[in-house]
Amino acid sequence: MGFMNDAVKEAYSGIKNSHGGPFGSVIVKEGKIVGKGHNEVLKQHDPTCHGEMMAIRDACKNLKTHDLTGCDLYTTAAPCPMCKGAILWANISNVYYGCTIEDTDEIGFRDEIFYENWNKGDSGNYGIQTDRDNCLKLFNDYKNGTHERY
Image (cartoon, one colour):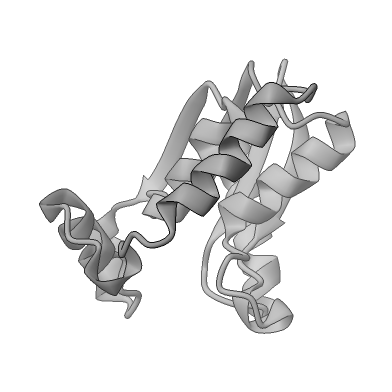
């Protein structure tokens, strides 16, 4: 049980307060919880407020960094593609999850379709390239400037 039990408790907190689905997460560094969160999609009116995203935001705030190298994430369900992206950007070392994508689908969440489309390379209407030259100029201006790279 251990840290997964803490993630489950976090999820129950969200359910009890009608914040969103049964998704809770904790982030652990050197044996201590440094961030926690639960699904707040309904509370925040924001589809990005998944449990993993909230825990990442909390851990980054608490540790005063955007780099969670050396941290582990415990979450009540397999992360969706959005959360997987955030986990990779945050450099989280290990992810431990409870329920599968199929389990999530069984309780009415539509994660499966995102994986199907992702695996087929189908971006639908979300991948139409336009005005590349203008955007390349922006990128080159950034590249040629002095900025902290992350």
